[in-house]
Image (tube, rainbow, N blue to C red):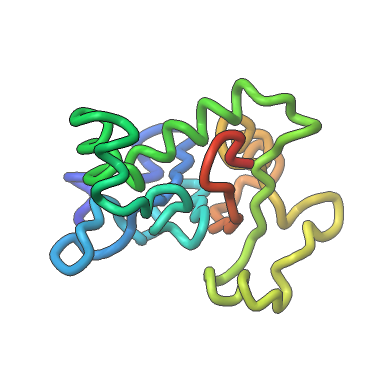
Length: 156
């Protein structure tokens, strides 16, 4: 997607992106993108199919009514970054953090091959959400970060 029609790292002094709905639109109904476009790009759960969003279609309507059921069915993955970001502001930082690990891919992260350490002085980890700028202020280079979340609050 061209920069002229989407967010990119030149749009602000600091752009952090939380990718949660990167599946292709036509084949899987994704509304997001997998392309890294920010100063820091976070890919919770690989950037698509967020835990807690895969309820079966009938239960999403029974549990939440028409409006909430439709929201869950159509846009749960796409709306999840808002919930993550709000939680990153409201949660006690010592007990619940979105610690994310710098890695080349989700597959490498999941295999545990070289992506499970924060490295010297935490250089390879960032906190997803409100506090991600703290990592960027110290490093000033773009990176992709991966983490796993829970399917319900607290997500961290």
